[in-house]
Structure formats: C-alpha cells, structure tokens
Image (cartoon, rainbow, N blue to C red; front, top):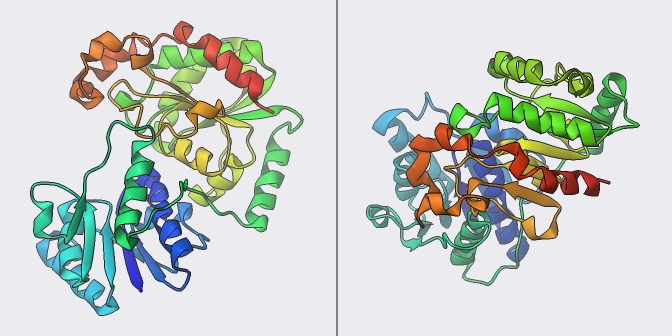
Length: 349
C-alpha cells in the first residue's frame, strides 16, 4: 500500500498531521507513506521515522490551475493507493483528484465530494479537535480503530548536544530557562504589549529564571517595545538577543528549555511535541478546544477569554468575533490568570 498525506501550509498544522503518518505506519509497517508540505515546514518533520518520503509544494512551480494540473500529473506517476487531503483547499483538492488514487479522503464541504471518494465531518465540540480530526482521517483511510496519538518531533543526539552547548555558552544553565512566545504571528494573535510586559514582570517576581524571547526577525522592534515596558528587575532576567540559525536549531534549543509561556502559535505545538510544559495565552477569536491537548494533566495550561467572560460569546464560535480581537484582548488582564500562572511555574521541574 502506498499513501500520500497532504498538509501544504502552516508549521503547526504540518506537525499535527504527522499523527496520520504515524497511525498508518503503525498499523501497516510495510506501507509506504509520503508527505506533501511546503519546504519551510520541513524542520518539524525531519527525521520522522513514520514518513518514508517528503514531497515539497513549490508555490512558483505549482502556481495557478496549470501548476496544479502539473502537480496532479506528478502525483499520478507515484501510483498512490490512498491520498489523504488534510489541507482541504483547491490547491490540494485538484491534485488529489488528479492523482488517480482509488481512495481520496478529506473534509466534507459542499464542493469537496466532487474531488474525494470519502469525506469526514470533524467533531468541533471535543477537546483537541485538531488532533481528533486527524485521527479520524487516519481511521477512515485504513478502516481500523486507532489508539490516541499525539505529534512528536524527532531530534538527533547531535542536534541536542549542539543546543546544550549553545545554551551553556550564552546562559546560566543552573537556572530554569523559560522560552517566551512574546508575540503571536499577527497583532490579532498577540497579547497587547503592556499586558505581555505585566505577565513577564509577574514571572520575574515569583521565580529566579531566565526568559528567552522568541520572535520572528521582522518582529524585533515590537519585541523591544515589550522589553522596554518591563521593569528593571525583569529586564535583567530577559535574554533578548539569543539567536539560532534556522527552525531546526530553534527546536533543538526549545527541547532544552524548562517551559514555554506566551502567545499561542507554532512554538506551542512544537513544545508539546517535545514534551516541554506550556502556558498558552489564546487570542480571543481562536477556539480554545482546537489545540488543548494534555490540559487536564496540568502539564499544559491554557488561558482564554471564555474562561472569564463566557457571556461575551453568546454560544457562538470564537471566529465570529475575529474583528473584535484587539478590543477584547484588553479584557484579558493578567491579574485574571496570575494565580494559574504561579501554580504552573511552581510545577516546572
């Protein structure tokens, strides 16, 4: 059996969808599993023992309808038995259909049945809906029950050793090291600057730790604004300019941290895949149930506006309120969750 899994974009989604590859490979060890992703997301799947081959979706090469037809032709040459389209957009649906696979599986949409042989409807009410959806796709593909599986990142001993040496050279490794997702991927996914500074001041006041700022290169000025808003004591505990080359190196460094605290995003998913404790502040318009795996263990904690002001949502999906994100963020005052944060920090070993 030969299977292709498609999850073109977003690092967190690409990592999450590796559970499909793992589930199929565990049930059918001799099955050949391929994974179609964008090249920039490769670091989260590199060295994964459940993926036999990684294919790259090249934006320029597969641009437009003619490009998608080209991709479909290339996939057809691979002679897949099953294609699982997790991405679920026309960029993936068209090549999935053109692959010629006898079994083509994806999410039910009014138009998706034109391209797929089987569709599934995600359970949007359960915890960890993103993970449950992917397990459902894997079950549908192999027609078997599957035990719960969660994403994992597979680092080599050499990568881990390099990360340890880098941390030892730049930080005091006798202290706890907390990675801070100081900014989200956009403003409507980032706790306002002054509120994030309050969170950092609180952490610094209750624990003798080192806070390593995690932000994209184009976010440096924004991160500096937050640093400047912190009090002098907090600033002494912040490692602002800790740089690594490439996402894979960042993952290795993250694996050696004691926890990750901050805005929800790809780093949270990577931390969970590395078994690193997380304290995640969700944007008001993001569904807290989507990625909240392990929350019941206390190993991973979530803060969401619905925890404190459920009446704002009027029983509607949080995405309905995306335009109010910046306004509603102001209601998520750090004082609401400092006790929860203190308990989390106390559990860090």
